[in-house]
Amino acid sequence: MDSIRTAQILGITSTTFMAGSNALYSYNLIPTLLSHRSLPLNPRDEKQLISQWHHMFLIGFHATRAQSAIIALTYSFLTYKTYALDPFIAKLYIATGVICVSIVPYTITVQRALNASLVLRAEKLGVSVGGTNAEVVGRGEKGSVEMEGRYATVELVRFWGRYNAVRAVVGTVGAVIGIWTALEHASRRGGV
Image 1 (tube, rainbow, N blue to C red):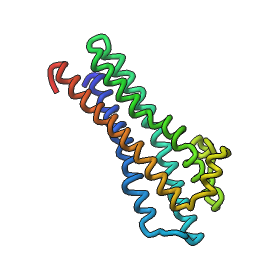
Image 2: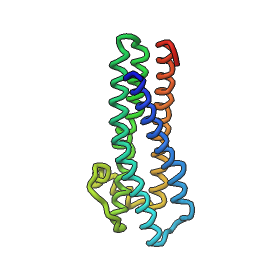
Image 3: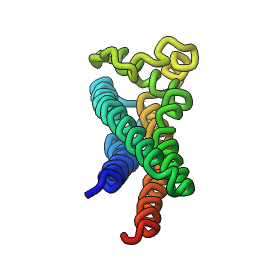
Image 4: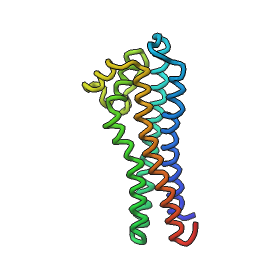
């Protein structure tokens, strides 16, 4: 197996895994966490909900960092290796990488206040909150503090599921483009 095929497999695996895990959070885990909870929550249920969300959030944060690094490296490598021979394929590879990794700036900007408000709520309810970048970004900002004070925990978690669904869709689009590009690249090289 050559280095291009290896990078394609690694890139496609990483993009589909990232898209799938984001979809799992938004379409399976969040609805499950919210399925038996209605407003207002008793204090024990509220702490359990925010604790479960926080645990899931940290798993996603650590996984996304690694996946984003792999995606950026593999699609940069594929772009570099193919540009001289087929600029069109190279541009599709770089587009795949950019689309998939774009969930990081989306999270840091669009989801910033929501993520921080949930971390603030977790802290307020006595959940042990660490100092990862995901937990620190936006915590003292006005929008985060206002959002945390305005909405119930159930509402914040529900909002998070919706915002995270965008990450799943973006990742899926990137994964589909990556798969199509690898197949097109293989057909231009003389075989799938």
